[in-house]
Length: 107
Image 1 (cartoon, rainbow, N blue to C red):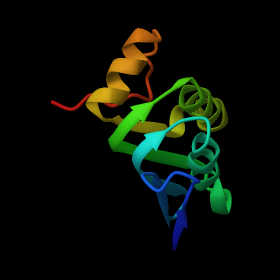
Image 2 (cartoon, rainbow, N blue to C red; image 1 turned 60 degrees about the horizontal axis):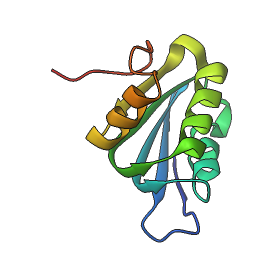
Image 3 (cartoon, rainbow, N blue to C red; image 1 turned 30 degrees about the vertical axis):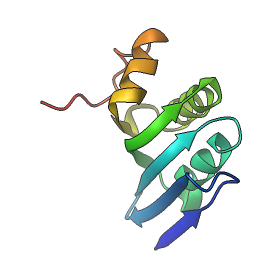
Image 4 (cartoon, rainbow, N blue to C red; image 1 turned 180 degrees about the vertical axis):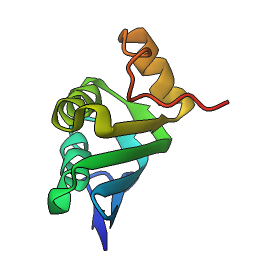
């Protein structure tokens, strides 16, 4: 199943695909206070018990985005995986969140 959440920002999209109990959410563009909730909603659809957020195409990530990400970490616990873009990784480093177990480091 595919769900596309379009935020008020035309440079943002969050597309969810559910396979079994895991939701894969591909996010592109800017995640900020006007779009962070759409990212969260896309990741919490259909009763999935695990989620992977593919943020590799995210160009901007602010404190509202961090808040939504932390809510997802609380909800999914060990079942959350986050693939960050360079920009997202930098924001998480500055925020002191770069050592979280849900943050996937690519070789």
